[in-house]
Length: 563
Image (cartoon, helix red, strand yellow):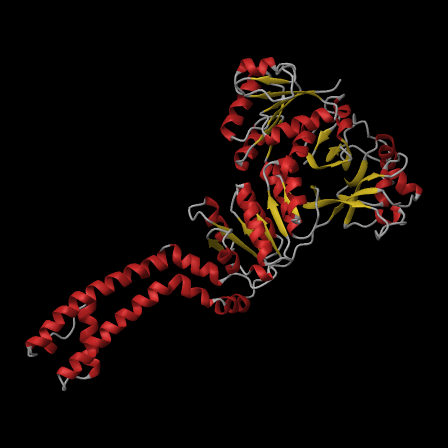
């Protein structure tokens, strides 16, 4: 019996999840606050998402899984609590922006899995910026691997190569295989030595390679020195104030030395500085001076108080305010081969962190100085340019002509397109990755403007939610020829359907693709993996069509997932 799944909140992401599940043949019901054109009343229940009556109308008491896909954490939390009261055994897939809260709930509540659209989509943006045309991601060997599709054409390097020649490479995982003719699973094709032909499609995961971070103090100092021209923009007022103050002191010093020939230049300077700063000085300088000098001294006291007050204020603002941070950020902008992230939104800061962790130099551009992610980014040692990235001057200040790629990931689609077009006009050859929230128009925008990638987080994250709804903790997922496949880890127990079987036999009988197995404190891959007999305690990492996942639910406890 197929599991009954409820998707609550049919926004951009939720409706995509709903359609994917229905496409895979799942018994799915949606809940939304308003009717959806083209959907019947039996398929989509309209009402208050967190109301008990709405959840009961959707069949919450008989459902196996509830996917909560709303965009507000507060509402999702309320729906989750109401659902657990009505059905304590229901499995919940919950969308949370606050990942810390989600992780806490996962540890506290049984059968609760929190997922983040931002967390799922950000790696694909990052991979796209680094030149990988990723269609998804998969977590293997404690790393996030990009997944891409290899379409075998006449000029492809793998045309005519046997699949078994590609199977052994540990830095590459063969995940799924769709031959142009006939039907054969990947493992059978590998064992039989089948060759790749024109029209075949192969889904491949590639191990990411992190660059060692550049931490040389000399490089950092050279970067600051070569970027000192930025000081003119951020510290001009402080310099002008200092020049005016020095001019006032010099005027007073020269006046006293010319009026009193016996007065040395040092004494006159000492008195002038003390008088203007209010610190006091040698009052004997003006005690016996003419009235004109005394009047001049009074004027200098008033003028000096104003000048030094203004200068102190500007200096304080520069050092303690945002101007010094802006100058310091501008002085540390990389000269070349860096990534420019425009917009410190939730997905923007994730991209920044991932690029930084991979050893790449990053520059962030953000209009809002009060954005909560600005300090987070600066805390990583990443410069932040405060300004509108759609302005040419701001993009030029980020050294766009020598950058590796530009990512326009603000929360506004129109702004992202404007930034991308400006970036292309300034540097036509630079790769541009664009965030576009509406999944239906992301592909159109990419085709129309010919950007390197126009990605929709809803489009990228929905398959992961759908896969998780169909079974277990998912390590990766993808869509090939409208078929959803998932990657997961299963712990072999004595009652497991795979216990006591050879991995190659399991793969050929279930159309799954084994990736590697953890057994006896070692990891087996390649040909050793296929010749492994599965024993209790082994952990098998594998991919399989999502439509077959529900079959693993037949025996409760027979298939435990490990993430």
